[in-house]
Length: 217
Length: 298
Ligand SMILES: Nc1ncnc2c1ncn2[C@@H]1O[C@H](COP(=O)(O)OP(=O)(O)OP(=O)(O)O)[C@@H](O)[C@H]1O
Ligand SMILES: [Mg+2]
Image 1: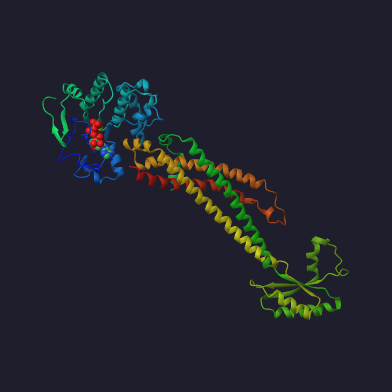
Image 2 (image 1 turned 180 degrees about the horizontal axis):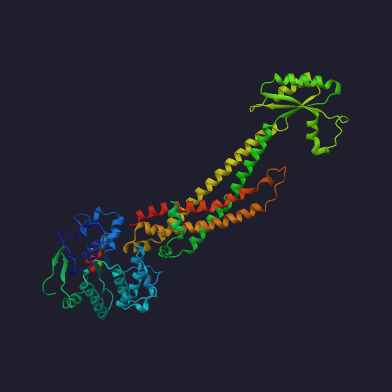
């Protein structure tokens, strides 16, 4: 993969098994976000192959990518919402744009907001949320379609330790229900904390390679 | 297309909410559509009125010219005969006949009443000349008549209208052309407005894409908004335009051109199609703009 300059990655290969829990770590600028973007079709690889649910991304048209994205929930490093809609409407957005905003689907919305602890903030605007609340709203939006895969990019980036723990718990719960999870983070403490709850593989990008991290983590 | 359009109007207000409201461009688009619709009403009225004029005038043109023979009673029959003979030899004349006195009386009735004492009045004898479409050489005929039948005068009063009929036809064409230009201008303005709105909402579009929205869904939100805006703006414009046309001075029977500019009868229904045309133009223009812009935004 290259943004026009040098190659970001050397020879790397990863197959994510359904139901697994992965952490992706590495120094800033090593390509964690880029790796996740390749994983939900936001970027096309400049060389090599990316398969989503068995399909080569380059063979998908824009609609095909849109459909694949409905099976992948993404929590972005810089979470973006529609600022003119309420938190509840933003969380329900994936349902709305896929025409699945039926009454019983929306009934789950309340439950979901409660799950991430945002029931009281349902009618707030995104701009009125704290950093941790934004991250949790983003997680709720990522999972409302009951995706098979959740990709989270620094989900605990700018929130305190307690809130990070809470978010991690939510991700672990999702994984217990069968969702495949891939979390990019530079927070090694978070990874250590997770290891006592879940069987997670830790991958590290360093020197343009993807390596399995040692037992020190 | 019709099903699509009606689905669009009944619509998915949900999809509409996805794009933040844009007060100023919304009002501008509505205003532009309204102003264009207002102008379109006048262009329509112009082309309908000139069409009517052209028809009436060319009808009158198709009718005969007349030759008036004012001669003492005893010479009259001979002169009529001479005139008919000349006419027979004139190229471009289809037929000619002397109009009987009773018929002449009928022609005069509107001016002099039914009890006209024809025998005591010096009413001229009339000869009706039906001409070919290409007409005849009026100048030459006049010369021959003055040489051979001094009492006969060719009256081709409708002939001067021929260039007017042509002018009226041109005006009608210009009216239709104006309507087409107005539609094209509206399309151009709405394309620009839609493109600006799409560009201004690049962030919104990015978020919608991240959550799995297909381009058709995103496009629909914009298309619906601009179509409805154009429809309502044009509706107001058309109503104001019709009001303005209605307040024009009434057409007189004999209607000069200027007073005949209004709409008549069922023609009043035609302007009502202008908002539909405006909405269709907005629909097509915004769809095309959205398709293009969404392809470029990655
Ligand atoms: N759109 C882009 N255009 C050009 N270069 C880019 C672009 N996005 C990222 N890069 C570069 O690619 C490299 C990897 O970036 P990436 O965002 O994937 O890193 P990261 O591991 O997520 O870093 P961080 O921990 O700071 O989030 C960086 O050197 C970055 O400058
Ligand atoms: Mg990153």
